[in-house]
Amino acid sequence: AAGLRFLPVYDLLNHHNGMLNTECLAVQEGVTLTTTTDIPKGDEIFNSYGGGQVNTVAEMFRKYGFVDEWPQYHSWEQRDEESDDDDDDGGGGMNTMTMHFLVLPGQNNVAIYPPPSMLSQIGDNTLDIDDLLVETEKHNQGLSTQQLIHFSKVLAYLIATLITTVEEDTVILQQMNDNLRMMISQDNLHGEIEELMDIIC
Image 1 (tube, one colour):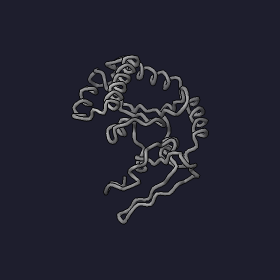
Image 2: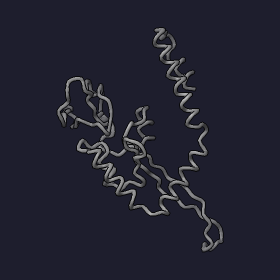
Image 3: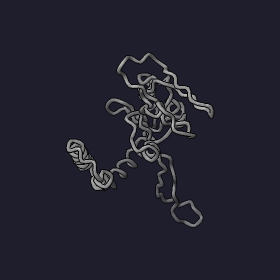
Image 4: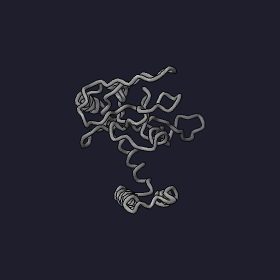
């Protein structure tokens, strides 16, 4: 967690940037973990694996092997081919734009092109999700029609190029889950790594 060592007890805590209820101070001499709110008995204690940085969904998956429940921050560089008749050579050019959005809890709660003030709340234990949802609605209403059209076109293109559909992914994940449950119920842990790889691949 501190980037220096394994931390007993602290490393047992799960990550959740939306339900964060602790703050951590990690230095060479040791670590201090403090709750930031009253936590009822039986409730889970969460920390943030972000280390004070805003990590995208892809970065979190690459580093830790899971996808945030919420908030989910997606960001990538999108290259668009566009004609440019004003170029000296008369050829087309490539325009690169940062595409990013923030997924929040609830149905259709997505901040399109979220500003730094909104992103800075990710992994902050002062995050108030209700305030952030209100801020998201106001922010999206301020986007131009051109921004919204471009955003929807890019996402539609990306979805169309995916190898599998959402429905197919749902079936695949359910099959993986069923197979894992069967392995656990049979207590057949011999060669578990190979079997898990067969399921995933």
